[in-house]
Image 1 (spheres, helix red, strand yellow):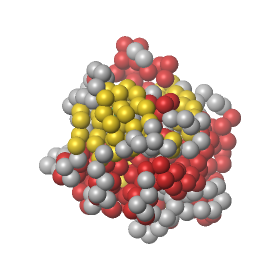
Image 2: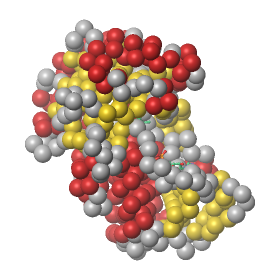
Image 3: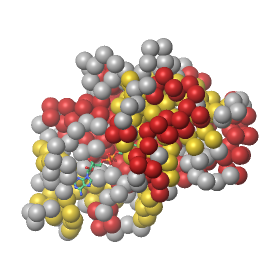
Amino acid sequence: MTVAIVGAGVAGAAAAIRLAERAVAVELYEAVLEPRPIGAGLLLQPTGQRALAAMGLLDEALMLGMRVDRLFGDTPAGRAVLDMSYRRFHSEAYGLGIQRGALMGLLWGRVHELGIRWNCGAAVEGFEQDGEGVTLRLAGGATARHTALILANGSFSRLREGMKVEQHAQPFPWGAIWTVLPAPVGFPQIELRQRFRSASQMIGLMPVGKAHADDTERGINLFWSLPVAELEGWRERIGLDRLKQQMTTLFPDVAPLLAGLSDTAQLREARYADVWMSRWHDRRVLAIGDCAHGMSPQLGQGANMALIDAHELAAEVGSSNDAWPGVFARYSRRRRAHLRFYGQASKGLTPMFQSHAVVAPWLRDRFFGWGGKLPYIHQQSIATLAGVKTGWLWGRLKL
Ligand SMILES: Cc1cc2nc3c(=O)[nH]c(=O)nc-3n(C[C@H](O)[C@H](O)[C@H](O)COP(=O)(O)OP(=O)(O)OC[C@H]3O[C@@H](n4cnc5c(N)ncnc54)[C@H](O)[C@@H]3O)c2cc1C
């Protein structure tokens, strides 16, 4: 019997690859009939890059994406809020800005090379587990029997509720609209640039390279924060001209990039949820990726964590010939400190960047820039961004 993986996003595809490499028979179930490699630009941290390297995909990812050396965010008054350089963390460290589509293209290519069975248009609606295995219920009434089940179907998974594990998932009150636009000649492409007005307005620009190897144009991911309540019908209510005006008022330097934005259809909406679970396994069922620990994209960790999940799961499979409940329980223990730290950090930091709060962003503007000048605080901040921290004071992830 094979292991079923539900969801062929970053987490599901990476887990399928890493398990197949360990000679585990896996089968992917993906609800979308014809999955296309699309999605917002991602910043992959050194830890996620390490997991990609273990799959032999980092060199190709580097050819498609762009190295990001620095994160810089300020207010319209010119007060620096964030100024972090990967080089101050490690001389060879950098973030990798990449289009989600480019990353998915690499992962799915490897899924095909490894001959992994992949069912598209196969939405899983429920499951039951017993001492021998797990039975999946598919849309349309079919069932499928597997030895174990990995849930990798995103933050808004309903299947997670079938796990007998204390859990809660809270849709985040803020989301975003985003697009990838061609980088104008001379446009800076080495830093992730953000500008904030309090926590109620934020624009983010990140170099993300090419979608395909033969593309000539390199892209910049444009991110504009909006409350979820305003995402519905924003095209009619705000419209393109007003949106562009709001963006250039906040950050005039964005004007040349916005020349490539001519239709609201180019912009997509993103919603996210905070997912918390007391543990990530329930006997023969395991949750990974956003399904297990969804968070806002402020810390740039979601896809990164999904790759680490797959990497760490494979390490547990390799460490003994134990049955699946044992493997999943050990995985949960192995991931605990890292996942807990980033869950807490995301919950604490996100309202400083996306909310109607007044005090939190005021404190951010006064103290973040100042704190960043102190070597210890800068080290801690960049280590958090790099995805290596496993505790507030000490603890580093060893991959
Ligand atoms: C605007 C934005 C910016 C981001 N920036 C970053 C960043 O800079 N760095 C970073 O690391 N992360 C970032 N993230 C987060 C990152 O995109 C996610 O964490 C990551 O894509 C999660 O992958 P996943 O595979 O867990 O879930 P998903 O990508 O959500 O994939 C889930 C898959 O499951 C399928 N599915 C769902 N239900 C079923 C079902 N019942 N049966 C079968 N299939 C099903 C879906 O179709 C989908 O293909 C960002 C996210 C957003 C929205």
